[in-house]
Length: 258
View 1 (cartoon, rainbow, N blue to C red):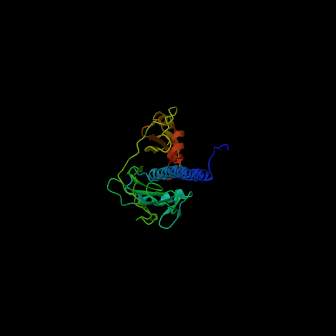
View 2 (view 1 turned 90 degrees about the horizontal axis):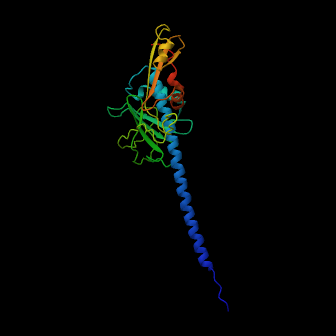
View 3 (view 1 turned 180 degrees about the vertical axis):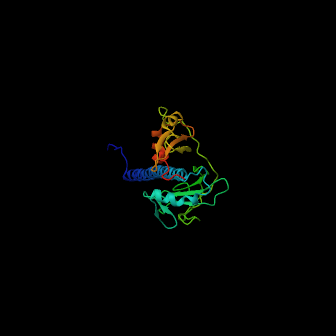
């Protein structure tokens, strides 16, 4: 009788089981990676929006330095059209944020973001991120490593922050990975911006002198002339590029002259 070569039923079943286990592990790994990338993108977008509104508040209120983030928290919530959660403020995309004004002496406060609100995992470094806010209104991402399974909460009454802890790791502008054609920062990097202006009558602040200084000449609602000069640390950007990164608030003059 001729011997037949092949696999037994038991061998086939074992092979199928191994393939199934490996497939589950691979799918879980891909899901975890995709979720991490989604959380990071939401974090960077929310931080950019909040930092932009902080700079806008400082500009409109003519603040050169920010003493405490609590002074402008109401302005921030209004501009972001944030809703109220259980001890935190909620952005339209579901990101929860909160401020704490009890930072150390070198900072104006702290910001905590939970990119998916109260939904799990609620773990620092995964979906919860902590920033320090310096006197220039810039956000500095902290080293988020500790777990926190509680909803955000803070001491300012308008939002909450779960302490992620860690040392400061200030983000520095880096041209590597950016676009060499227009010198734009890499995706997710928002360098510090400085905004200054001269104001007065059109005779005192005229468009020609403003253009020579590299500024943007405009008027506010009362007819006062403004020469607005904005510069981004480490980058030589045009007005259009600055507006793309930070919003058009940069070149909007204060409505009321103080």
